[in-house]
Image (cartoon, rainbow, N blue to C red; front, side, top):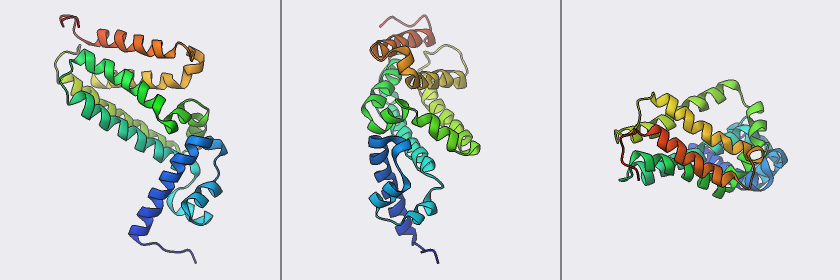
Amino acid sequence: MPKTFTVKEKEFIRNTLIKRGRELFSIYGLRKTSISQLTTAAGIAQGTFYTFFGSKEELYFDILEIEETKIEKQFVNDILNSSHSAKEAIRKIIKSTYELLENNPFLVRIYDSKDYELMVRKLPPEKLETHRINDTIRFLDIVKGVQQKDELITARPEVIAGLLRGIIFSFLHKDEIGQEIYPEVVDLMANVIADGLVKKNEKTE
């Protein structure tokens, strides 16, 4: 008979799997990390894993969503709740995203390898669609925060959010763009896009 857990035990085990999963995935990646490694690190039986996640890809995905939420909160705290102009806020959103991705071992691994593609192939379509919607909502909140500064060109927030998401996904193609020049590409994109999105009558900074 399967073991039953209290609510508190479930929360503890889930959080432990997420913590250990982040560590193992950051080192070995999705493909080379096994369920056995995850459960051993979390101190649970292998069968117990499936009480919390349907697959290691689902655990990987949940960790990704947690990391993305952290980035969003940092944007709100450090950029939107500041005196930055709209142009400077957009620049910082793009450049800060790049820096956060570069300095987060888990995100570096997922965007700098085939792990993202592997994860997407193994996840249920409805889970991916929910993520896409939530991702768009997160970016919409950021864009609307910038738009409150009343300096952006007239464009639907969804379109601007899509543009910013597209820039982040360019991280998946660093090799094709060129590892050595990518930081300069990001810097140029940040300046060009910020200039393009801000009303032309804004004073040059």
